[in-house]
Length: 216
Ligand code: AP5
Image (cartoon, rainbow, N blue to C red; front, side, top):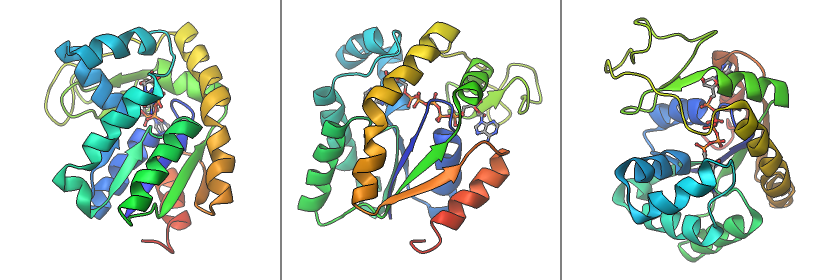
């Protein structure tokens, strides 16, 4: 099964992709996580990507398309995948469509997680992330058991470099300009499933499984 997850920063794409990935045994392919790993490792990709990410801007399409095409060739993606954060522009969506059409492996569904700007800002500003397992926490409603350490592996939690209020506002604006048109793109192809993601995590998971019940 092959899915794309769409939604504003902080909509819960990563959180829900982990839930679906565990349920179906297919990988969650997070372009944000891959880019942050490249930044951490100081690779040429990471050095280039960082300048865009720290401003809340998108990394150029040509870089992203190449990165995702390479990732889709890896053996674990052959049984299916959840693309978390890709595509984010119409050119990226067209490139993905072309690759999947050539391989006779079309998408099964695109899930759009809907939240308002105020929720997005509150969720992102309060988030901390485990650098090892990528599990996320929130200072208001999902704190770690031991303050600032991951419950799963004990790693010290980190804040991302694009989580300050100004950068978050820029990320929201960039989403509206460049990613929102994908809703119409995928609605035209009858792939779009929409989930109200303002509810607690478990309720959002239940809604996600509900809108996907005909393809699971
Ligand atoms: P990326 O890492 O993909 O960031 P994003 O899309 O902005 O999304 P986030 O990871 O911030 O949010 P999320 O929706 O996954 O929410 P989460 O589950 O963590 O991308 C970062 C940057 O990389 C981009 O800005 C860009 O520069 C670059 N990039 C990446 N892909 C690209 C592409 N294709 N093209 C070009 N550039 C690209 O949840 C957020 C918080 O809320 C957490 O604390 C979580 O615990 C909490 N939470 C989640 N759900 C709920 C709920 N239901 N109730 C309460 N709390 C919740």
